Length: 268
Image (cartoon, rainbow, N blue to C red; front, side, top):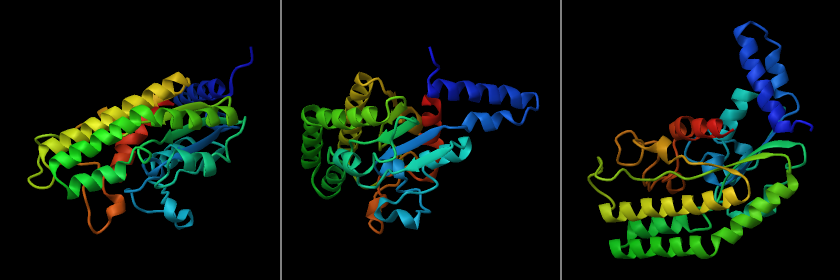
């Protein structure tokens, strides 16, 4: 049976690593030969919060500090298409991000679902309203995740597999946002922080289930961000910033390089 393109890439990487130990410098070129990577998704993949945005990406706010660009810089795939976009929902991925996918695509990454579930509205409600209103809004989001999001994810995952039948697809999750009983002395209540963390866990579980049902790898970043949540004293996530609302609750550059990148690399 013919070796799959991704298996061939993995084999080449192993050969390159071994060859490097013995001084065979040409092996690394073989590792990246004819290998295509496409990065899809929302702001957690485009890199909102990490800064240094590519002006050519406009409101999508893609950056070389995002985990897809960092991985591509480290591994030099022959082709790298970066279509992730801030604010993207499942429908946006279907309508505008899948163009680079084809039968020659070997690797796909994606974060998606948070905007469909109303992440931005949840955080706005929790910041501006009472604890009970915040908890109710989180519960509404969780109900949406149970009833509607699975079908939307299925549409995206089916389209990815149809357009890139040979690719390894890595679906990444979202971090928990708060360290409970941490260093924060103002802002949300512990009840609100607990509810928001629970909403994140609920979303991740749903995304992981749909990814697994499609034969995709799910890469959880919860462990990588443990100890680096908001209120941890060493946060890899932006807290609420009234001067730059768009970056609030998004990974910093350290969150991309220290949180998402190693998790994605391990999943690849």
